[in-house]
Image: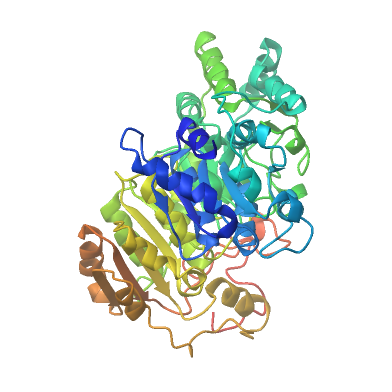
Length: 588
């Protein structure tokens, strides 16, 4: 029953690790895949259940479909807590099926028992513990419904072993009664921008001389990127995006002002400071964007906020216009109204201002350094992939460099752990993405510290002969932590320096069967080696020994606003903020 519902839901790959409490379901997957008349659902086995959870998340992020993870009870379930929380924080639809001890043994501290409902209840969108076998089939379907509708998220189903071995009649349809959720969902899905609301919005837009769109991950989750582009480009409104919305607009388009926030482009942050009408789409004014809410978009006469979640409205930043509902439909209605009334404003001066910001405060680094700069490596990768590769990352400096220096023509090409900031995300997420997008080059940009978290998944890449490409930017430590320690803790590298560690990443990749493995340590070899790396058809692993003191700039420090942004030594500041904070360690 479980496996047939998965097939009916269109699942085409399952990520998971077996164990005693989930064996009945694993056996059913095996039987399903033996039947040549059925569409197969390959079962991908990771090195660790956390890897399985992130593979399911990578699949979901890259495809827009629900990712599926199947694990056993006890430690199998607890190892998926981090991926579940990660998916909840970034609104990623996955269904996690956990084995559980038999219902008669629940609460007895049985072998490999864990209180899944209690553990997952606080980090998942919803958790089901199936105790009535007659509701099993409907529960699995309802889990998929909850995961992909409204604000997407992870749903966990706890499956006692005796429920899995029960036999009954397969109904082929039916879901659980969840009237409250469906009623709220219907209210959102049937909500439409009223003519009065449209007029109110265009009254604010018409009065604006410097409008700016602030797009968040909700744009991509809502599959609203096409309507966003039509609205923004049709009306000529520049766009900044959050980390989670990278790719919502083509980063190379003239109206793209790239990423804003703590490590956003200086010109993007300055544009936010300068705008007089901020149009917020599927974003939530989180602390990495609006660290000081009162000083965020300080010159905006008005702010509009569109979101599917009513709880986000006025939660952090008070706005003058709001709409709760489907983003795609709202943007289409706004665009249609603009065309119908021939709405037009001359924002050419604002366009020139934004273009000048992008030119004056462009991203830059020490291009004369004899050491390999990470930005240079990413520029070379970007030159070859031309904004069309799927890029996943771990978390840290390499994550921000990738966000800053890669181009993305389309949504769902940028996969990163945003709100949770989970080290170890990049490699398993790339594996999941490769199954979702076999037509694309998939590259994991990782750090030497981050990849250690799930290094065992190197073997998963070669076991399934996936053409995943892995870049480890090795600066011998927890780079982002070191950056903060150098800037704000007088250079005391407490537990972050890994220069004495003995890990040989090249030997590790070779041991796991990578057919192409290189270590890059000479600047003059960067173009040639990177080209060979991208051209190789199978799994490829590249370790790059980068400048250990390379930093992520710009940086908006804790408690600072955009006009106090630290721009470093190679990005031009407006003159209001320091290039480095007072008292910063001179090594940095």
